[in-house]
Image 1 (cartoon, helix red, strand yellow):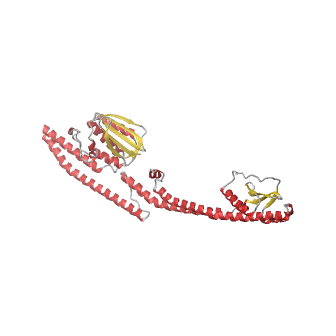
Image 2 (image 1 turned 30 degrees about the vertical axis):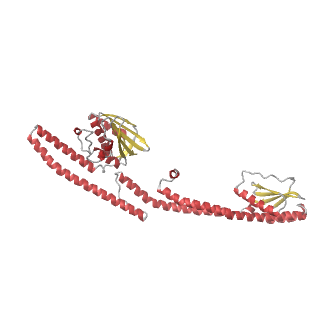
Image 3 (image 1 turned 60 degrees about the vertical axis):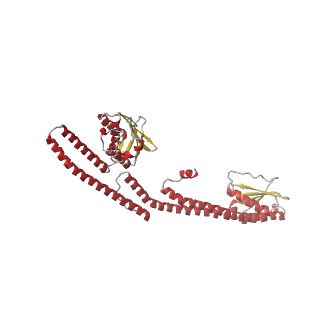
Length: 444
């Protein structure tokens, strides 16, 4: 379960995952470096600055005690102010002010307060309290002297601040950003040939025209692209050879059939002659079906069509063949297909259903960003164990459907070939109306 939940948040693309592999270690290293730096360097520097300032404050306290009060030590305190930028004032307070947390407080002020208190406590025996005056950018030390009351010591915050930590942090972030930008640009250049190859393979798998392209990128990517182009050429060459061979065979078969038809015309109109003409017509129909199956519709271009308009044409054709059809389709559904090939695949299913049923239902809906088309009938259906077999060429389920229906056993194979060439899928199941249900899933 944990692995599944982690995968849910991982980037889907190769570029995203590659960038994650680059960025995550950099961020981790920066985090560790920052923690170590601020724990060691920043903490040490703050402690040393606090030690220096506390030593100066201790000196001021000693001068006041030795001179017998602030007024008597004005000369020395002026020198301290001029050289150390620390001001000392008497107060009328009778008790040390209470330390209060303010919204301006930060990690830096808390650390400085802790270090400075530790150093002052180690050097000054008198009670004291530290107050951060953020508007004035000062740290105020209130010290209660036994014989001279409470004095106020103003210490500039810059005396307790080291800019080296921020400079290092900015330098680290800047360098990492530059390196990441360079890495991202380089990675995009490496991913681009892979994306081009993936798009070409997807288009070719859907039966679309894929022009040759120059393999680019790393050696392994170029090898994969060259292998894909070689495979594409071999497949196209084999398809062309197969089509040419079948076209030649068709021509050779049609020539004697044409002669037979002419000879039968000369024999007259007897019953036997009529039966022979029907056999010859059936043979011509079978030859045409075989050629259609082998040739396919790969040369037809893709167009955006309205599904409702296409289905309505099929319904009109079906009604002329006395097939009752009910449709349930949203008028706005459209998709990009090879129109004649796609219409042919749907027509095969509708006509095939109409041969064995008296009613056909066609519905379509968009589910999970896919178009699902369902064609059902109320005929006898086919056995479930034959669902895979009927997609093989020349397979006919004669036990469930009579021979009087005719056919070459190529209707479903042609349909599946066309749907697969569009990147879709075909699935058979039992219909709610008692017959067969054919579900097509097409990409939008």
